[in-house]
Image 1: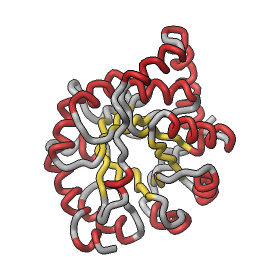
Image 2: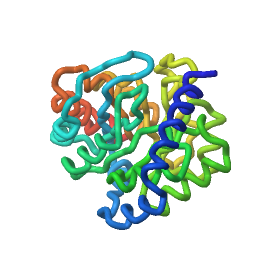
Image 3: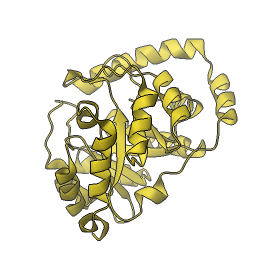
Length: 267
């Protein structure tokens, strides 16, 4: 069993409990009552490199990263630094997150919010949207083709923008075939948790023109933004470097400034 398999097994166990507590019908009613979702795509498609800043307490590879007692305050700092979107890890067992974190962040910021979790059922998409998410992560490695296509279509039908995460050329091909318009390329191998910072550069040319490319994992600072822009990144998603850096607002601002540099804006 890979690390990803183990995480998903835990996700399914926790999901079964939540499904007993809140019915799908109740979630659908909550979705009808939330504000209209914010569309991140115009910003992501604009010149330069956009920044998604992540609320991340811990990870399977590094353990505890930061004691985030007030995710709303952290998200506010990210937004003040110029983040185009805020990612909130909502998986509890390995990442220490929750949907309550997402709700708090949604109330605190006006930029789009990404629900970052291991989504395997439509129920979770309705949970995310009911909590105020504008985007939802779908990991190709965790889904067969039929489920991937179905979840992309369901996400879009309720106002969520699906961020479809890939790790290999074959996964990119599957994401494109499933209709993904926003593709993340993760430098971290979810089977081993190892990071290879050359992964994005190697795989990005596989993504067709017109599809937005997000570079994930291993982004530490402005130098990485310049390099990733050079090899095709439209967006970077940064978590660990920001929550451990001591000054999240300035950390985001430095990344945003790099992404707006003419060397990135003119690529």
